[in-house]
Length: 385
Ligand code: NAD
Ligand code: UDP
Image 1 (spheres, rainbow, N blue to C red):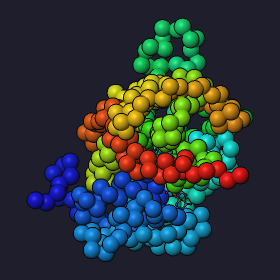
Image 2: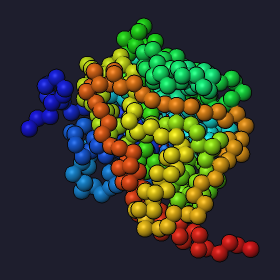
Image 3: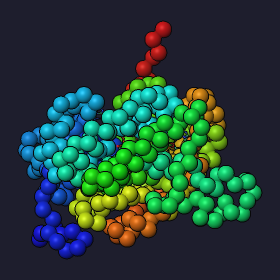
Image 4: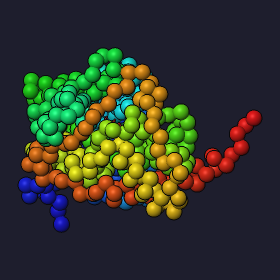
């Protein structure tokens, strides 16, 4: 049966230029596009480890529909040609781990703003549609964060729910270099929006709210640098795999909503296949029902990991660390992130499905299967004297 869009029109196969296709989100999006659609993908990245299973062997049913182009968009003249040959460009490339924002602010700003500029320009000049990945971090802190601690207004959703077309972007001072990422993402959003308004660029901006699942980031010392600090899912997974306490930054009081990567990818596919409903829009993509403090996240992950690995919960499950100790000078944090879902519901009829418990169960099962043996070997190795 022919696949149809949300308005009942048949979906025509298109060619997608996906930049950053070798990352966490890119790998899941490539998988979805190969398994469930007829679209063709030019997968651009400096790495392809997370999509190797889609590229080889040549006998895969979708062989020919996905090609990998190893390139760095900072300096590669092939970029414009690939964008021109595609119908749609999806830009996922970014430095997007908080440990980098205050320690490598220049790389962060260049990656999230300067390096994205040519992509926007080539799309605009060649009348190509662009889906650009921004972040929920552009909202920064909630208005409620500035109310007195005991103010009853803190409980009023008007002071914390984040709305694409209404909420302000509230960042800390320049010394708080944490906000270098959010600020660069905000400026590229404004530029894309301006290209839409002045030059007719067909764009969609995605603001992911803590998408998590298999293949996110790396486990330090196994498939990433020993001293590297990935995002919270991989940090806590690493601690659990090694039987170490989970580190709670500044008491783990910040709140987050986590959405399962597979739910979120459904939303992206709807954007790809329903351009008339997605163009000109900015979409929050998250799960407002999966809110926890970071401390609660740690507690649930400890329970779930014990269930999936069969190992006892550690005697000291968590320890508190200061953000200065963990991330260094200039770290700051978003206090609370609840996405308003009105726009994505109305335009694309999308809703997340997976509960926090279920998504952690499948993700930690994957982490255990993928890394437990490798970690055991590393731990067993005698330290060189
Ligand atoms: P990721 O780090 O796994 O993927 C990014 C990919 O881009 C990597 O594979 C990297 O090698 C590639 N890349 C970076 N610079 C490049 C360059 N100069 N040339 C070629 N490739 C380059 O991150 P992700 O979680 O998949 O995030 C993808 C996008 O979504 C990013 O723009 C990020 O800011 C945004 N985002 C993600 C989340 C989330 O919850 N995962 C939250 C907010 C925003
Ligand atoms: N965090 C933590 N311990 C860790 C890693 C992260 O307490 O080992 C906290 C971090 O300070 C932040 C939250 O977890 O409040 C989410 O961090 P993440 O790196 O996933 O990115 P963010 O949601 O801030 O973009």
